[in-house]
Length: 185
Image (cartoon, rainbow, N blue to C red):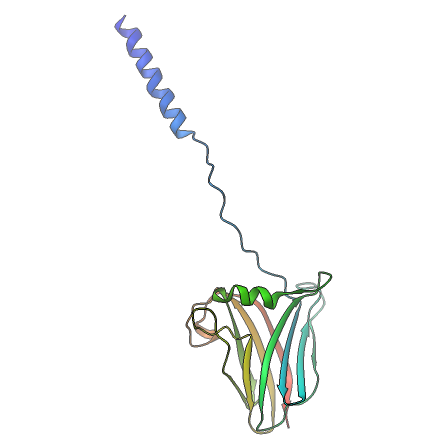
């Protein structure tokens, strides 16, 4: 009879272990914040009634076709422009304005502007995110002497903020567009 009691207690202990080990995992998975598709980057530079636009359009994304870059004109020397960036997903109809999402998720994004070659210009006075760090969807661009070079716009997702620029920002690049042959005359 003692053996029978021991067996029942053993079975109960094993059964309780099985129930706790096999508990259902009802935790909801963490939401995935998928990277947005950005096909078009438009930079508008306005000085009074004069607007210069730089557009990078890559409708097939990582497909076989290269992006198409257009620049509507030359920048004037020793001039200050108000700049703004619009990011679009033109694979949808109507095109989705990704700039709205970047602004809504401002703590998770930052735009960077990089100058290459001999191009004599600087960017400053960026708009800020809700924590007072640079967001950069709007900015000021100041040209210097006549010159030619490249101007790159890079959107980083989840950068370290504050940072001293693209080199130490970290995060992932959502889009980068390099406009070559930007001319100041």
